[in-house]
Length: 339
Image (tube, rainbow, N blue to C red; front, side):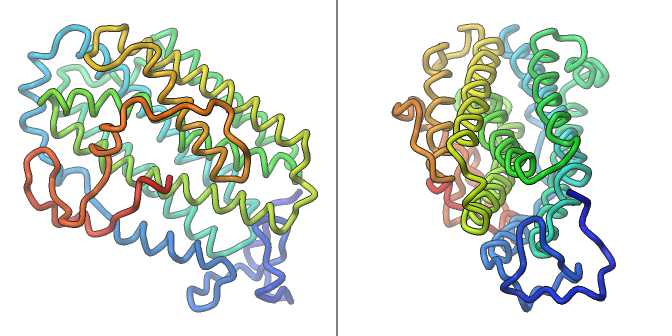
């Protein structure tokens, strides 16, 4: 499969002929005529959810960080380093490995917006690191020096590397599932850990920042889930039993990796988290993701820490859930029950 043609004035592709990939679009992003209405809806949500990291108050975190327990400080630093890596990887992955092969202009627009948001998350982490650390390089380099974190990151990077070479229809579909897993599983042990600190009254600015980041990640998750479901309608012959088994193996590996990571960062020393709870939470999320793309769940477990969803969601009054202050730049919202 070749990369899409950017300048294509001779295209005769009609709106009905448009495809997620393998189409022949003229490349024009026309927001008045779109085949995939869900892409326009997501674009509007992303636009409404625009926020800026420097507007999140981090003054209290600088004080709180000094008084974290050694276990809490270790967890915070590891989570932050892992999130830095993930969003740095995804900023480039979207533009280099995914968007060049997507032939629906409205989805190209959404992926471009997502890439901006991933870079904005990197800016958010910089604000967090600069607020709490006397040595920013230590946290930024932790993904290289911590062996467990490096093991996790190496596996994720290798998955993307393997899916980016010799692109064909099957690899494109698997890449969509890999992105669904990235957006829907690999961030979540770290997010929950940050909310645990917020729940205990510590690092409230960081928890608020993660709240905005997670809201973005939910739209990214929905983007890839809609892409998968649209391709299933357009190219049902690609969704074979063999593909399903490969996808399920990807999910199994992701669950094991993220559950192991959650146990590593908490080490049984964070209130409300045990190894069993962390694994069940990740298994619960995996089932939700599988069901969202038409597959039966694998684990059939209940949500073990539903309070996490309460911390992550935005209510109708758009208030800061820790301090009750109106956050006037959180204009958009999304229903976390649907992710």
